Length: 360
Image 1: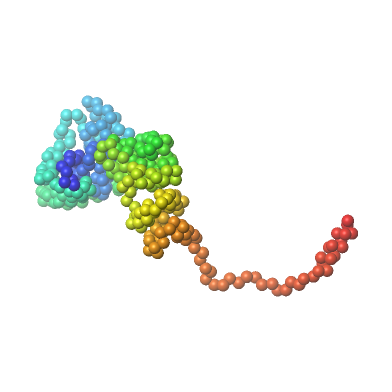
Image 2: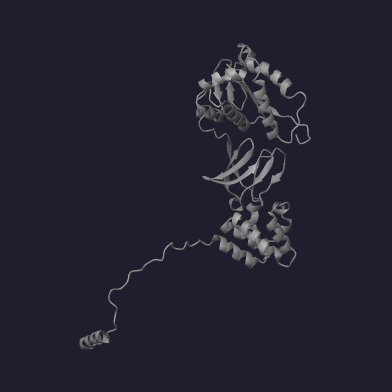
């Protein structure tokens, strides 16, 4: 992938009646990847079987006895309960209980990975694997030689239960945000907004992304990385800290490779060239906390078009964008008219004044 030879883990599914296969590749075989593989497989089949025969990996089974008794992992059991499927674990050292899959491992390895495929990324590989599985389904069925696997699958599809809402296949843990606004997961670090430094948040690991949650709110989301000992920053998470240290905008780790939109990058270069430009650009970035990054980006685009790069001019554009638009009335409004014209009568005042003097 990307010109580098890599090992991948492949999840393999097969419907027992039609023999239709489904395979999907991952960088590893952690539990969130197992859950994601099940969700993808059921989506591909377009329905839910009543029973699932599995092996005994630790991601699915936490205790294995010599009999059929098993203690399933709570998260895997949640997946089974969500789709209302019965999990059945094979007996150890009894490969014949899952013979369809065991035989197909060697078959699919030869059909799909020989010669070694080459792709830019894992998504490209998985798209190709799904197309190849559809092609393999055009083979003759091993028991009904007059029909193809795909034709038998159409009959089997009618017996599958409706798919319903997809299972949210994540693994969750509580982590503490470091003083550097980073949380660690699987040898890498991911940033969160600076206001959560020192707090505990929930980290939800998916097969392809990392989601950070505080209470009921999603506070950060990152693409999952499979490197080692690397920090991944979202520069907007650190912008509030620039109010006290605007100089960090030049050499701070979160801002070194910050890819800003073209208009904002041009304004940044313009400000940095002058004295005190760090402070001006930081003030512009801080406006995003009140009005949102989209509004600030639009204002910067307008400023570049109008060639007005000074901060007060950009602030004025932001105010124009966020001010409510007053819709004019369709027809002139007719106010109530007086039937009698009021007339000034000073005698009434004099009467009140005389009564006040008499009371005194």
